[in-house]
Amino acid sequence: MTPSYTAVPFRHGLLSISAAAVAWGVGGAVSALLMRTGGLGPVGVSCWRFGVAALCLALLPSRRPRADRGAARWRAAALTGLGLAVSQCAYFGSVRWAGLGLGTLITIGAGPVFTSLGAHLLLGERLTRRAAAAVALALAGLALLVAAPAAGPRPALGVALAVLAGAGQSGLTLWARSGGSARAGTGAFTTGLLCLLPLAAVQDLHGLLPTGGDPVVTVPALLFLGTVPTLFAYRWYFTGLTTVPSTTAAVLVLLEPATAAVIGVLFLGEPLTVGLLAGSALLLAAIAVLARE
Picture 1 (cartoon, rainbow, N blue to C red):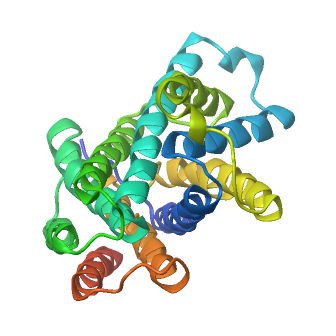
Picture 2 (picture 1 turned 135 degrees about the vertical axis):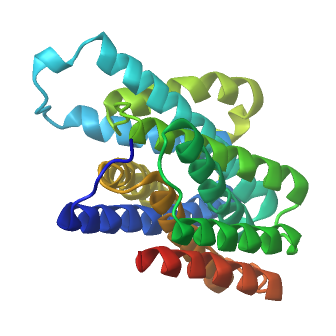
């Protein structure tokens, strides 16, 4: 049965998801900077991201009653943390191998496709004509982006990781919309960190600790990455999902790649191509279509 959405909470949900998307776009740029100048690998960036967020939450007094600290809550935290670990690590890998603009655009561009189909088939959410048009625009933009030249050294690997990241993010969205207790809490971030540490030890140990760059820049960048685009943004996103349909949320998140692409071109020296411009324009058009719904 398709849930109903009242006007004011729906608008608040749109604002929460949009704010999360912009924060994620800035976070992608910060992670790209850390991987370029700080000697960190994709797994290392993800570990720092989850570790800082979990530490911040652990230092804050909990307002949640003890009765809510049962096995169900920890199962939800484990599932959320696993989904975050897969999606974020794959995303940072796509940024490293395909470049910030292309990796982010494909990651989020694939989201509306996975999410809309999953919501329609698994959750029974009605796919309106406007939402279907938005998904079609997103698909067209995604096709242009895949064909565009990449700024990274291994674009094929980066594109594959971006699609995996998009699928992981869509899975979290669908689970939260189906009533799953997806929360950006201490347990979720700690689980994500624990999932990634063995991978870091086996494959990316050299990229786990900052080995280059200016500490005056690296330390604030890591703290920012763990708070604004992680701790705050995921809370905004999961809050918005309580009132916003899955397909609408997935298309709104396209604000993230638009933000990342602009930062990549202006500050990281990534190329500005016709394909990048056209693909970004179609993704933003998809957002405009949904904004009028």
